[in-house]
Length: 163
Ligand code: HEC
Image (cartoon, rainbow, N blue to C red; front, side, top):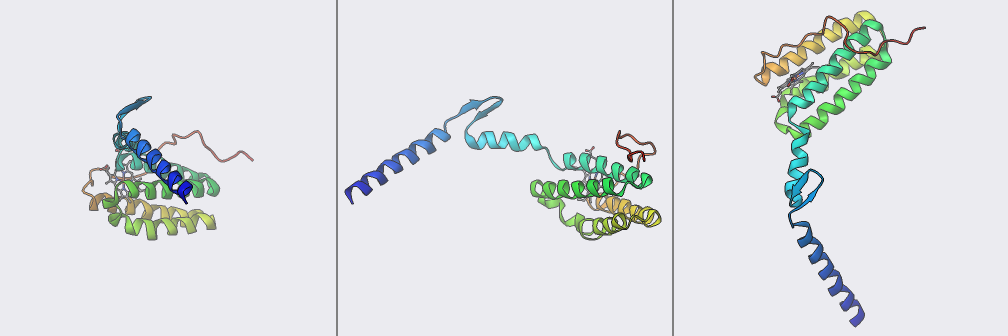
């Protein structure tokens, strides 16, 4: 019993020392300050929703050109990555999620179904509605001056594998 009490007191001391040590300002590479300050510096490096959108813009073009190539596997891959990026973006910027409701729950699944079917005509039609949904969210979020339409020229080195 005495031994257990002694052990408990020791553990409490270690925990207290660890906590106070964590709160001491220090430097780890380019990070400096207390743990909270360092975490805030790290969070800052992720950027805001603009970073999410730069990635969404890239993947949007990849989907468009993959559709022209009928490279459905690549288009599906890009759509899946785009969904993940948006979900991560909503964790950082929850206020944006509501305007994207239709986009996430209707536009993405509809485009996905077209890609799974591998039907070029259906793809063109669904991709147009998909693009409109980008613009609807931009309208809702007061960035209508950021009008979305696919790039006229391919920029990516990824092409359909030659057969
Ligand atoms: C939440 C709804 C929402 C959806 C859905 C959405 N966007 Fe955006 N987009 C925004 C907002 C908000 C901004 C402005 C960024 C900011 O304020 O941080 C933006 C900005 C952008 C930018 C400019 C980013 C920059 O800083 O250079 C691009 C490119 C972009 N969106 C592409 C798209 C494309 C392509 C789609 C559809 C596949 C799309 N967006 C769908 C909300 C949305």
